[in-house]
Amino acid sequence: MSAVPVDRPRARPPSVERILAIIRVGRPTASETEALTLVARSVIAEERSRLGMGEPARPDHQLADAIVERLGAFSAPPSPAAINATGVIIHTNLGRAPWPDEAIEAAKEAAGSLLLEIDRSTGRRGARFRLAEEHLIALTGAEDALVTNNNAAALALAVGLAGRGRGVAVSRGELVEIGGGVRIPEIVRRAGARLVEVGTTNRTRAADFEVPLADGSARLVLRVHPSNFRQSGFIEAPDARAVADLAHRHDALVVDDLGSGALLPTEGFGLAHEPTPEERLADGADLVTFSGDKLVGGPQAGFIVGRADLVARLRRDPLARAMRPDKVTLAAVAATLGLYRAGVAAERIPVWRMIAADVAAIRRRATAVAEAIGAGASVVDVRSTVGGGSLPGETLPSAAVAVDASESGIASERLLAGLRAGSPPIVGRIEGGRAVLDLRTVDSGADETLAVAVRAAIAKGPGVRRTARR
Ligand SMILES: *Cc1c(COP(=O)(O)O)cnc(C)c1O
Picture 1 (cartoon, rainbow, N blue to C red):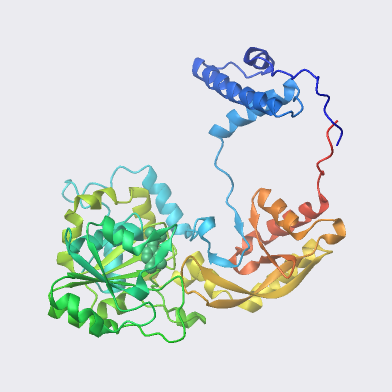
Picture 2 (cartoon, helix red, strand yellow):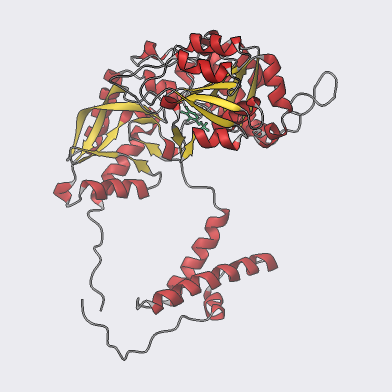
C-alpha cells in the first residue's frame, strides 16, 4: 500500500442538488421528490464520512445509482425466500417452520377478508376465528383451547393463573432458557408470580413438591419440557402423574409447557418419542402450552389447551388481548391444524415432509444435483437434525452434495458466503472442510436452482481481491 500524501486536500462530496440534477425519474410527484431528496442526503452524508476516513471519492454517477437503488428497494417486494440446505429442519435463523401451502393460501384469503368477526347465521359479532381452537380441541382431546402470539405468551398467560405474588413451583432441573435469552424464572416473575424452586439440577422427585404445596407457598406447578437440551448421568425427573395428583390434592394447578408439542408420533419417523399435548393432559396437566412453529410446522403462535374453566379465565384476562394473533395468522394456524385432522399432515406440512423424507430418495436427488454441478461436487452421507429447540441430540440419516471449489481457488467459507449472497440465498454448512448442502431440508422443486447457483458461484471464481489503493 502506498502512503497517502499528507498535504493532499480532503475531497468534499458533491451537493445534493448536483446529484439530484443527474437523476432522471419520469415525472415525480411532490412526495416522491421529497423521498428522493431524503435518500440523496443520507447517501451523500455517508460519502462525506467515507471521505473523512480517507477513502477515495466515488464518481457522481455512482452516487446517483446508489440513491436510485436505495429508493427502489423501499417499494420492491421483500428479499426472496432462502433455500435451507443446512440439514436443520426447523431453523431458527431461517424463520423456523416453513408454512404448508394451505396455510399460505388461507393467509392470503384472510388478508383481504372482512367477514371474520361476524357470525354468518346471526350477523352478530362472532368469536374471532374460532376454527383454529376447534381444531386444537379435536386434536388434543382438551375441553377448550386458546391461541396466542407465541408459546412464550401462552406460558406467561397460563402462569398468571397462580395469582399476583403467589408461588409457582418449578423443578430446578427445568429452570431453563427457552431461547433468545428468555428464561423461565423471568417469565414467572413478569407474570407477577413468585418462583418456588424445587429439588436439584439433576434430580427432583414428586415428593419434593409436597412441602410448598402443603403449606400453600406454591399455588401452581409449572413443568417445563427439556425440549432444547438433554441431561444424562445421575438424573431423575419427577413422575408427571404423581406431581399432578399431589398438586390437585392441595388445590393447586398444573401447567405443562411442552415447547415443541408434537401432534404426530415422532417415534414413527425414527426419532425419539416427543410427548404429545394429549399425553400431558392425560397425565393430569390442567393446561398444556406449545408452539405453532416448531414441530406443529405452522405459523408463529402459542397454543393453550386444557380445562374449559381455566381457558375461559385466560380468555377474559386483559393480557390475552395483547397476546392475540391477527386474523392472517389465525387463518394460517387453522389451515395447518386442519391438515392434521384431514390425516395428511405428514405429506403436506413441510416440517413433517422433511422428517419423513426417505434417505434413498434424498441420495438420488443429491446424485443428480452433484452431476449437474460437475467438477468438485460429490455425494456424502450426513445427519440432519430437527432443530428449533426440538428433539435435542436426535438425528436423521441424510445425503448432501459436498462441494470442493479449491480447484477454482475458492475456499469453502467463501463459496458458502457467495451462495448466501445469491438470489435466492442458499444456506449450507461446512463439514470436513467442504461446503455441504443437505438435501433433506431442500424442497425437491429447488434442486435445479441449487445446482445452477453452485455452478454460477464456482464460475465466478474467488472474486475481486481488495487491491492496494493508489
Ligand atoms: C420454544 C419454547 C418456548 C417458547 O416458544 P415460542 O413459541 O418460541 O415463544 C417455551 N418453552 C419451551 C420449553 C420451548 O422449547
